[in-house]
Amino acid sequence: MFIPSHFQIQDEGTAYDMISKYGFATLFSQHKGIPCATHLPLILSSDKKCLYGHFARPNPQWEDITGQSVLAVFQGPHCYISPSWYETDKAVPTWNYVSIHVYGPVEIIAGEELKNSLRELVLKYEEPNSSYKFDEVDPGFIEGMTKGIVGFKIAIDKVEGKAKLSQNHPIERQERIIRRLEQSAHDDNREVASLMKENIRKKSQ
Image (cartoon, rainbow, N blue to C red):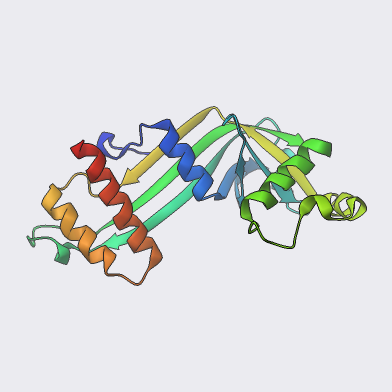
């Protein structure tokens, strides 16, 4: 990923936090010699060494993925930035966003390792008071359902993080952008504004 130095996420913890928060990723690999991608949730292991996920078995991407070095892209909030928000007309439109790229080789998993990854996925996204409890589902039903998927894990070799949050503009201009984004009805716009404010706060410390 092209990352100018002022947009680079250098804190590893911040990158992992983004992976956990925006866990619905796009997984890129080569299938029969051409690029292939699947959109799917990925779970970060507790030791932050692996990502776990699964394909639908009819999805052919898994068939030749073992051992490949793949790319998982986690897209955070993003929004359009209008030059009309600046104090000058000598500017152009742009886009603010946060994105994390994770690289590593893939290994197909099954059995208890696959079931544990499914359990973690359910625990992450089900509400605490949900009536659905993975461990209370009939084991035979779970066993049958897992026959329709192919589990995998990605051993994390490299993590790249980019937060393009108008850091290349003066603080006054960044604050003007934040005020406009905070007025938006769109969640992504307000989330970008929040990240911009946090970035300014950290740099002022």
